[in-house]
Image 1 (tube, rainbow, N blue to C red):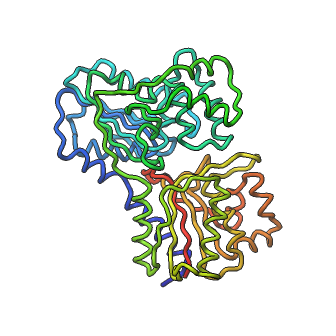
Image 2 (cartoon, helix red, strand yellow):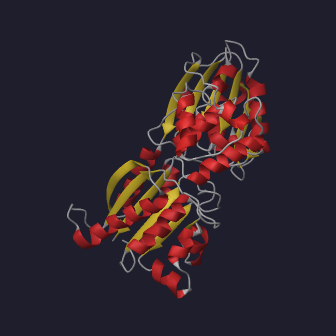
Image 3 (cartoon, rainbow, N blue to C red):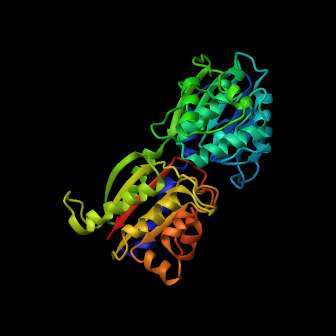
Length: 416
């Protein structure tokens, strides 16, 4: 076995390659036959990669193509497609522009026509048309408040669905009578199709009452226009949609396990459904490392890779910069302080953790001491939600760039 940090990066890079959506989209389209006009609409952080795969399979049979993805996530032109880069995690003017183009492309189709709808995580912000009476400013206000209060992704999307003209099954309704074939890259724990990208082409199981209860749970204060829009129910049945899931966080966990095994680590997948505060996840992950190093009552012995997948939340308290994976890693640094040949990393599979250019963070037994040596206080950094700069100071940021996929997050303990 080699250097533990180098091996961590090998696991990261190879595992991301293993869950890229290109081949999955090809597989979902290869044996399908479509009639009439074919319109391809691709939304989310992996939208460009998914659209490119569709173009390779369907070629000139595509009548019109629209890609709406995050800034710096496009990799160039795709013949026959309009590509719009837009805001994430908060929608912006381009989100609305791209969505309007998609609506225009599908709203006058016939029953014999086909919409191929490629969906990946991030679509909730990127694909947006505010409901009647609402403005983009309203949507930004709601999204910002939900992100700051610590609501989880299902709760956030429940609110978004009731304030949008395309979410919660409404885009599929716009496409009717044309058929919609949805190919979905899941970034939601449990692969809830009505929550991935806020379910624009799937019957919505959430209710007005649930949306209002979320507002009460987090003591959120919105204007009367927003509250009135939340009383509008979403479609509960759709007859023109067929859906297939092409990837998920469980596949990412399996990929990490296989790549760790190839380097000599015995892999253990704890869960692919971890949901909690990022700081709590960091404490939990570091406690696993201590069990391996100190007590080891469960037969998990080094060299090993203990893996957890899921999606955590961050309750914003400070004014710093960071993301949930960076906060997990930096929180874990305290728990593994002084441990030799022990490393923890946490990253978002899309390559952009929160509003940063980092995919996540990586720490080891020396991280805490390095911070102290620079005159930096770990608790102060975390209290200010400034994990990005804390990790940057100790070369602990994971920088992959936009990966072309988006299947949640993975947290890994490596012990040699």
